[in-house]
Image (cartoon, rainbow, N blue to C red; front, top):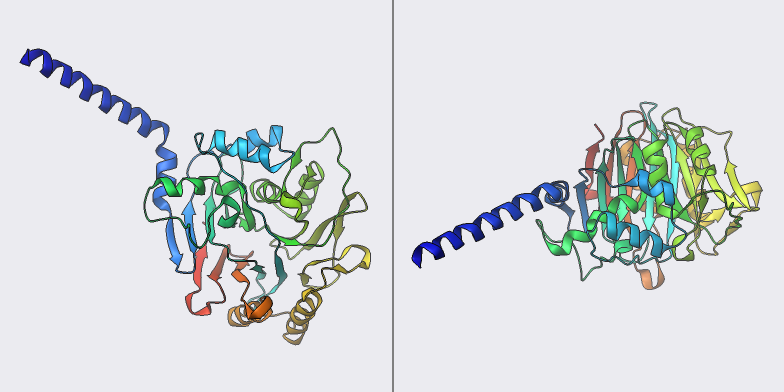
Length: 353
């Protein structure tokens, strides 16, 4: 009897070891990714490296006509069946492209929002360019009362959806892109094109574009819908200094170029000089950035840029600070700085290798 129990125990333990090995092999990239997650600011800013294939090429073959479609794809492909619900809210942002004192091209942006934990995400797809991007974790359901925790945990599993949720970023070719909310768009979809949403359009540019012109052509190949009906336009720049604002108006993709050595974007439609705004501070912020750049002869050092971003960050009703994160991408040497909630005392250097 004892011998049979011993044999049974050995069999059970062997099965458990076998199952553990299989699970480890199946989830090794997910485990490595979650293990890389770390908090870099107490306000709720994190950093993570995504290991393995996040299936974006497969996603581009089918696209998504609604947030539900993306939720289902991410749930099946990345979250192993754990459901995710996108949480989209309006935002006000400022972004600009200029040069620093070394003539490097810099791309800077504020993201103004209700409380939004954020993540600096590093990706390196096999069939695409390496990039660093900033993800709004509120979009994945995290909040001030529900933040990722230290280590590999069930609560952190939704962070695996991060490659599909970038709000700005820079790739290894020196292409940067950021979304900014606008009051309206005018769209006409082509039934022969795949449809992307607000954030997967950014992932498309980061993974596949080596310059601004390629980014424009890539976006032209797809329809777009805006998650939560929060309309956006995009500021895009590359390491040559070329920059454009991409907007969706007059039922087409419109490109707003500039004849200056800098470009500024805020929360208004710039196409054809329409200047359709939201009625808040978008024009004041826009003018303040231009005045600072021109007063500095289109040469902002790091301290100037940090102070400018903090200066034009949005305050809401009752003086509530809505500036969630600021980031500066150096498109000439693939480096930058990021910080949360106007906290210039905790800016973090980074480099895209």
